[in-house]
Image (cartoon, rainbow, N blue to C red):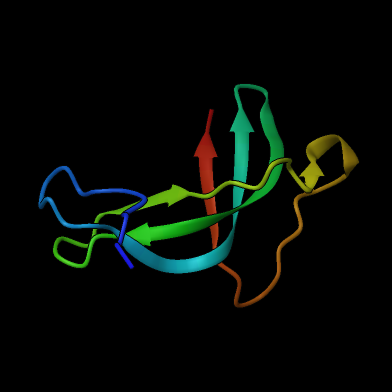
Length: 81
């Protein structure tokens, strides 16, 4: 089977590998919290640069539904749109 990478590191030229599946992205707009969505974290095995890929089709939580959920021992990444 041929390995087809999902992402390549522009710095090192190495294929990025899954670091953690099922992280939560907390998306913020100019007005504040917007939504939470599941995604995957990939990292370069050489220089350790990280990217977020594999977003779910839809957010699972919107800010107008209440505060963002936070669970212990779960990876969260804040992004500003």
